[in-house]
Length: 530
Image 1 (cartoon, rainbow, N blue to C red):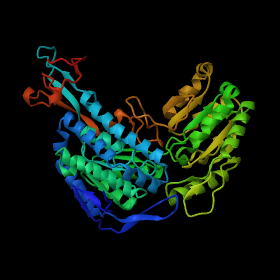
Image 2 (image 1 turned 90 degrees about the vertical axis):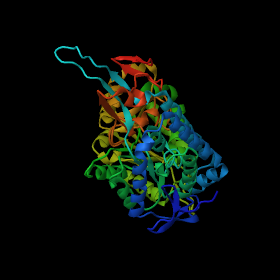
Image 3 (image 1 turned 90 degrees about the horizontal axis):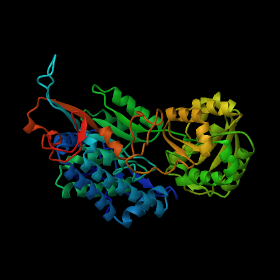
Image 4 (image 1 turned 45 degrees about the vertical axis):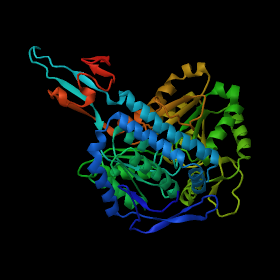
């Protein structure tokens, strides 16, 4: 297979009309072939028009048909073989093992959604039969289920070129719901994006679906992104990236004549709370796991542990000492692109300049060269200074963390209470401490989407129970997740049929229950026909 550098619009690979660019190898700074073209606003409109034209047809496909499509997408991605893995590594600096793992996760979540929609649970079918003799008023026949929302715009993330990109969780869940997808590929990995788009395009053809079900566009993020979000045919947006980027899209979507939801997963510093007894017993082993988590993917994970909260004492001193020693042996890491490198450098410098902040540890120094590399770091600050300075809660995207030293339980609780919304909150503790610190746990429950005990936040399992979201600014809507089968809820909406002819109802709501799915009938869960 070859990479053309073109856009995929409604089944056709065509050159963009708004300039061109190269992919770049972040490990060397060298440009990668071929030249990629950029879409203009008219080409975005063409893609949206094609998606809109086939939205009803795709929404009305059976769960079996969409499951076949999702499985075929996974198979076609695997069929790309080494070419995909090599391109991922060339465009991100990630080692082959990381590329293989992310490919497995991407294909696994496509297959998981295929299995999930066949169960029918996501439809949430409900039936309340007519009660014509009810007094004082009769009840009509009422039936509801979830239907596809319509065309979805998905923005590929820089740090996950497969799992949060062209065929990532946003795309998989939108396809599963029956929504056409237009992906804005990330310019950091355009070749990877095109290869995966080729795989999806083959799946569209093999499954006999309309070409408008999927398009890939590339180009300047602000211009192309704005054109996508404001296009009247788009009904929802999936985004993973910075708080600034997600908030800008959210604002655009809400200024439309018809506002639409933006499901943006954004900034998070993922606090790790170290409780005293756990530190007393295991400071060194906690430090070891923390350093691994902090440097995973060169710290370029949305769940990177960027903040540590703990009470001062011998245990915390041991943790900082062990972390300092371990960090000193961490090699300089490759960042995804020049802008990410510059953002990390300026973010660390800004953090170091804040009152009371001290840098206590660093990884190996960055060597001179052309690649986009960075040095890991650990900073400390008192809880008093932390509580008085909102800037200390700003995300620094990369392998840097800030330790907040608290004087006692009360100050630890105050620091946790001052946090903004987060994707995760981690407790390193004994079981007895978990019971004793219920006030802290309750604070975290209001602040985060996922609470971890005696682990670290990096590593997001793709499964039915996962919650990957949280209160703002972690996400734009704390009720939804971007990972796991619950993610499909973002791209469906309930519709109710009142006194509708039984034979013309969707299969999910017919008396005979031809899909064999679970339904709530007159308040009781059943798979039986009526």
